[in-house]
Image 1 (cartoon, one colour):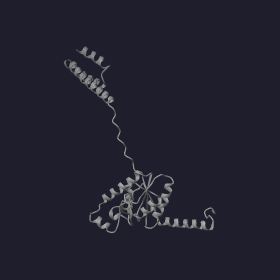
Image 2 (cartoon, rainbow, N blue to C red):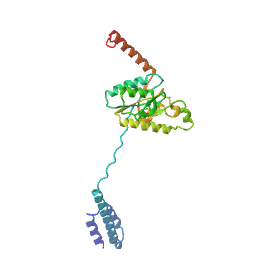
Image 3 (spheres, rainbow, N blue to C red):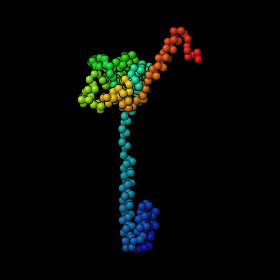
Image 4 (cartoon, one colour):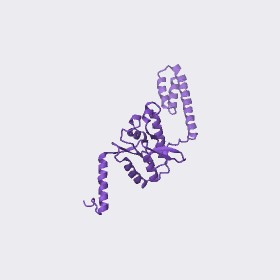
Length: 254
């Protein structure tokens, strides 16, 4: 029996996997009466599992790969114009940026997520809606026909809006949904999107939609204006006017 066991170990060691070799070492410590039956059971179980795994691999190889799911378009980061104070030139800066972007991109989108002063206009379907006054200026001047009025001014804060928010008629989540839906609609039809904030950075915080919060929702890269920048802009404009009137370039003089 021992000779038979040794012969079987030497022959099967050439074909059996390492896990069976480990079992053979354990079997050596067993009695002579148990050696051969254990080797047979070990070989049969290892062979069946090997055959099963081989068949499974062949089956997986013959199966056609599942079609890859279509990736959803990733929204582009917009440019968000905000300011530390009111009336420091957000709309003027937005007009300048829009002019520069249209020289570099075919379709430029514009959105003012939160507006305060509204005008009544006719939308694309002929219905009367209220939108922020800056939206009307930008859309008409730059011919943004691919952007809908309703998407360009999704949230407006008229008188009584804060009271409705406190009373629960308007929620923070609903405002976020309206802004994101409008932004994604414009983003899909534009190469780049420009967002204009409203008031200073804290405007809208009472209803959970401040400039900082909205910029975070849309993932915008913020351009922040201050009164110092406005002063520099005014001085630069005066220099340009002086150069035009008197025909003398102050910048070239240095």
